[in-house]
Image 1 (cartoon, rainbow, N blue to C red):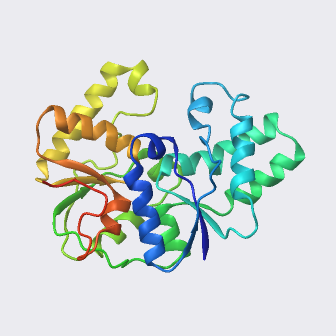
Image 2 (cartoon, rainbow, N blue to C red; image 1 turned 135 degrees about the horizontal axis):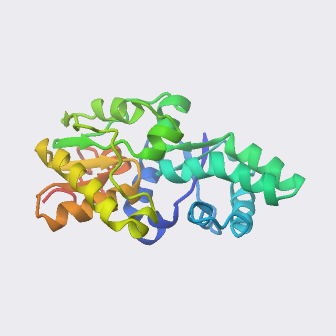
Length: 255
């Protein structure tokens, strides 16, 4: 399969290892990766803060970069951005776009997936040959859980990882408190929500807390670092990309 890889803003600027791990994993599974060089932001942050007309060029750019019929599927290591492409892009195109943009958005959103969705639903791959001999807990991010409804797909992938000690996270479906600009505009509430999440993560005794969104991991990881918990955060893609020969490919999660 020929798969277009969307890096996302956070992946590009702060967490490139999650993007690299996605490419390594899918290539190892025998698929051809395409990385359009002119890709930009999906526009989610504009829409979420009320600027719905401004991301029209970003939506148009996404369609231009990934709408090629030779690209069978589009993947991103982010439930948040996948949710934006699948839901917000259509709203923007309908309100401020033209017929060509609306048609392009419909075509591209139909083949856009978050990583666990692509692996399980499209590629039929649950055991991806990963090896990660550490205690891990999984945080299901809000967009992946409530917007994309990925369900237990990430957990199914993690359970198939050789050597892993996967422990259940108490109150897993509770928000970590990030929510993009929510964490900035409502800092006290966000911090209280994060404190609850940190208590639950630390209570598992996990070496690593993983998720499918770097944004939530950034928020949780910052909190874990400040309390010197000893628990690190690591994107799901990086765990799935790890093997016996490349045990910590592109990561320093566990020291």
